[in-house]
Image 1 (spheres, rainbow, N blue to C red):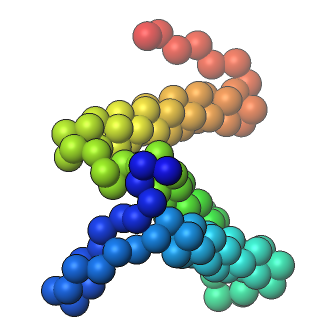
Image 2: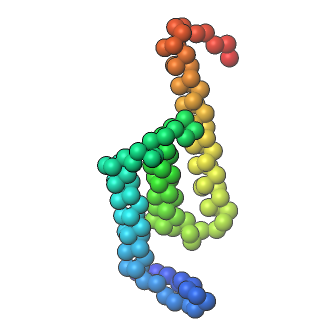
Image 3: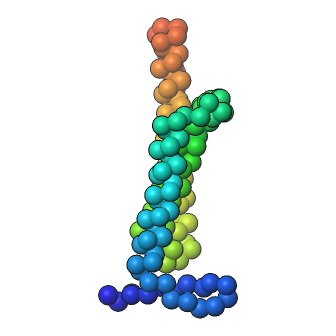
Length: 126
């Protein structure tokens, strides 16, 4: 392999980190985050069942942990850490824009469907 070792800076000293160490680190991190999600899903603590911004606190934790895992997978497996800052920004901001757009559409259409079920047929002039 052309890139057997990655250069890591640790406490001001230069140290080589092998790909095997990197893979084990990724595995451990993703396993811990997934285990937290599974445990929260099994036990469903009562303290996290209160409403926060229209959803249960537990649902927000699931969403946040899923985004953390998605970001880390992109950062590590898609080698975004080795790319230029401009490319990293393009990837992140495109995803942020599309997620915000999706949320807007879901809220808009969901609100309309809610109103139809609540009040009957509603005509909207766009």
